[in-house]
Length: 148
Image 1: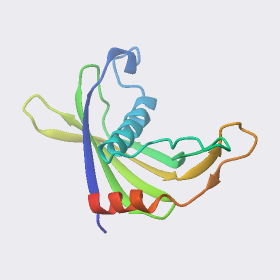
Image 2: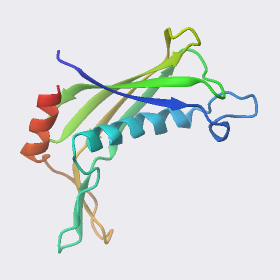
Image 3: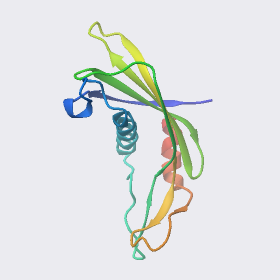
């Protein structure tokens, strides 16, 4: 199985922690999504497509998410987030995201593993109709494959 990896770095901010200074669990999901969006930007692809005259646009909502926590992150920890494309389909992308604590000596320790699946959907900006699954543009899929 081919996989690609896109990396971002973050530092745990005080507003991302609980009273004990540990990173609050929803922020792992936020960082996972930020890595995905930064990868889209790197590929020069919009995360949300422009609206048509019919007020329809495309987007990549989550279909599945999970997280396994191995060790807590703390306020001021420096973290490397590795987003890996595990599977590409016409209308879906499956990812794995590994979170690494960057220690003071430069070594890295895996602290969490997340997975998520996104589905390319056409949505109605007027909210009169539910989103419907549509294949992604061939040009985008080619960019992902080339990156892969």
